[in-house]
Image (cartoon, rainbow, N blue to C red; front, side):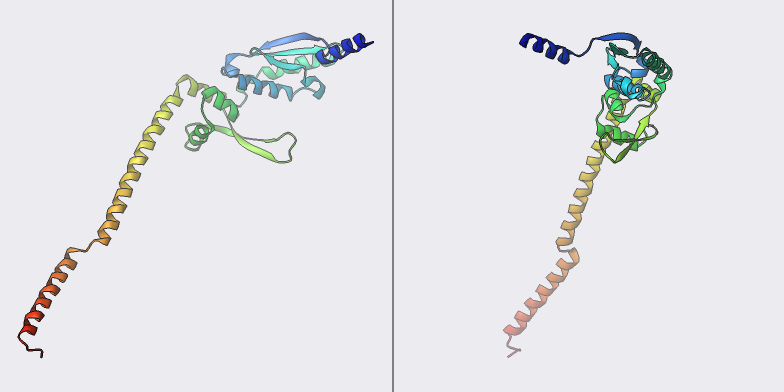
Length: 220
């Protein structure tokens, strides 16, 4: 009895055997060499499938694969396979979302925000989604995959980083010059002016005259 229980538990852990129904290789023009982008394509295609069939579709080694458990309805399998094929026809034009851009170009979120703000990264619009399990929605920019491909092919990230480094150095130089000028102005205001020095000397001369005048006893 114990052996039978162990055998049943083992089968539950392994799950039912799955059969490979179909495989779709994702072209480089769609993934742009990014596993994050491949996962994003998977999630996008899954949204076109019935809830029960979404778990059948997976991404493996740069391809989408449809693996179906024994006992699945043949009509559901054929329908799901057809929907995947249809969706993948235009997948190369699927907008690129922020986390995919960062992975494709190997950039930080800070760089993405900066280059989007100054127009070097060109937005293709915005997208609003509802977070799973949450009531609020978030809106973010998306990008044309051909634009991202162009940035990648021309190695514009290296160019932009060099430009940013030069701009930062120039900003530091200007800030240092401005700080030095401000300090000089404060020092100038605290030091006596030549006019003040002359006035003080005249006053001292007058005081010496009063001492001589007093020594003659004319003030007594």
